[in-house]
Image 1 (cartoon, rainbow, N blue to C red):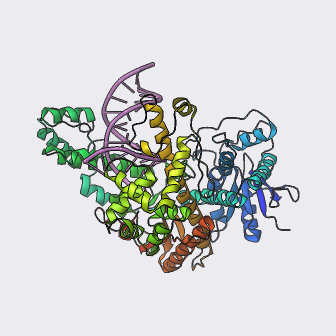
Image 2: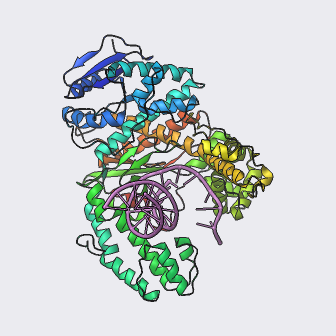
Image 3: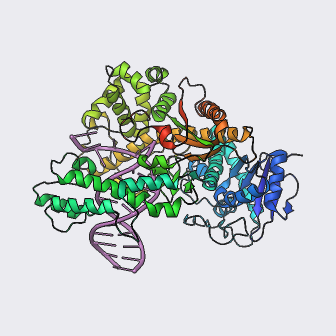
Length: 596
DNA sequence: ATCGTTCGCCAC
DNA sequence: AAACGTGGCGAACGAT
């Protein structure tokens, strides 16, 4: 009989492990099987019945499994589906008003048996060093000594399946858990495959911007020259341009009084030193954050390999650890270059968050505005006399909770013209201000207020429409400020987290479709190599680029249907095939108003 | 010296 | 023109 699910426990030392076939509810079918070579046994079962693999934590198991699978089955070295207990646990805890409790297998096991619950270990950089012989890093499960890991896995999984079924909306919960687990697979594979990174292009860029690579830790020539010129322009006294306090003092001595050294303030300063400092800061940041040292650490052998943290952001967005994977500066995008004979398929979901708002609220005016393609232009036509920039500013202000200044006025216009959409975000804000929690479309729950927040706001009344300028009351000034701050958070959460739901469904579907594309050369298969909130990059043999493009479009459509059901709102993906990320995304500076 | 906090910039 | 959400990261800075 073909098991629908198979629980996996690796042995602590050596390549073996045990497999436990399960039915969909998590009930064991036959006895566990011990296998001497776990990766081989899993590859075999994957080919035969492609079960959903149940394991404690994808980042600890699958990353170690990938190279072994690649050795054995270069043509099909990926597993299709998994259930990640450690990713699912916090989702369920959130739905059960137990947000933030420990998520490890050991913690879930302890809760199941009324034992003391161990705190989670701090998540360090992945245990890449040592221990090459075991599929597991040194045991991070936190199970009590003597507990059989496979038994615990099976029990906790069955309990999670029961909790999913018992949740208020099991269908959505099941989808959320499956998507989060699929995200775990994608993250591990992206770390394994890496983002193609051209050292030569990177070097050329650095040379143009900074000059030749300095020896040791010395300052690059162009940076040093700028620092010198800046010092001269500010009177000639020794000056560290990286020290805000020194810079403020030096400008003050020139008769220029600044409150900060931020770019937006410096841009309005009429003094020859200001443009020099702006340029210095720009180059200095490139050098410090993405210079030669960065490349030596993170982008070796033609691949940038960061570590992605699935669900690392409360909204369900991913975070990254090391290398700043989610903040690659636009100016360096040219260094992302496909291998010879390969292409990058770059797709981003334009105007994702306002479209999510339209779909969730079912606001007829917003739906109309988005129907023609450019939602901001549609909004402008409906309510802003065609002024697209003001429409965009107003809508972003509404989703971020802006109330002051000119943007506040724009938000007020939107509230009149799109009451259903604005009502949704306003309701989320009110819930947050009152200390409540809100959920994404698929049911990801936002963190509840901290004890400190509750203390601070105790007894304060919630703000209302009349208090939008933020005056609060004399007695409750801090309380009102904290309440409004939480309101902005929950207001944004419902949108950002639901956008993350959609994006997760997108990459899960795209991963599945990429695996199904027939390939000419075993192993030369399209790979997801980058994912950043509303944007993906697939690295593919050139002749498969069109198939990848189609897979992207189908996955976007599937994500819309899965997450938002029958909504008329579309989530178009702007897709480009190119050799470099820069070519796919266009210019470095000006024309960048189209993407979000 | 080492640690945690603040500033400021990068991405969405 | 500059307070408006989520993050990572590096240099400066101040405390230990």
